Amino acid sequence: MSILPPAVLTTTQLLGGLVASAKNAVDLAKASSDHALKGAVSELYDSLLDVKARVLDLDEENRGLKAELARKDEFVGPTEPHGYFFFKERLDQPLCPKCLQSQPSNPVFMSPLSQRFAGTMRECLVCKWQNFETRNQPSSPRTTRRRSFNSLRSQGD
Ligand SMILES: [Zn+2]
Image (cartoon, rainbow, N blue to C red; front, side):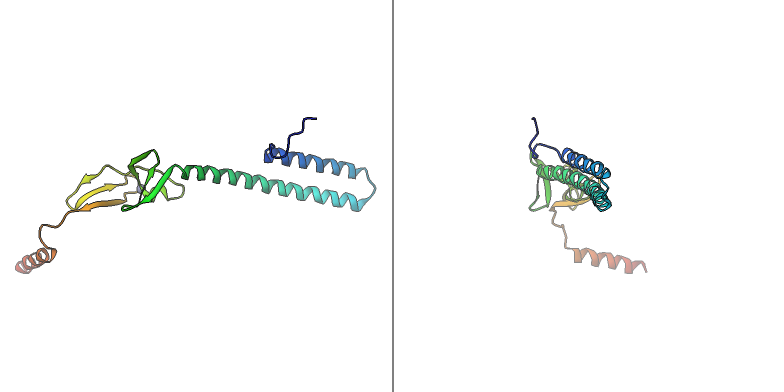
């Protein structure tokens, strides 16, 4: 006999075998004149069908989670000091942490570092998240600038 050990069978195959056995029991019970037995076997069969549906749902969910887990293994992060994630094979290309940690997860590369007035920054072109990696020191203190702005306004009044 070539019966596969249970570990080799898929969940669907295992359930299929179980349901077939139960169906056989239902058919055998039909020939019996024992009504209590017929009822009990039939109830058992219905419960088994419910369990089968539930197990198939869980099996599918489990497969999805395993795939997600395998995908998570592709990334490193969040890394200091900017909180970026990276593909393990592309540690020079930061990924947007907001997009990667959203549901469903979306790996998006941050823009190259660009020079702005306020400093150097990267931007996510999908969710528009911006991160300044360096800040330029303001050439004059802000209080001075605000004072001169206010004095200009009072002159106009
Ligand atoms: Zn993003």
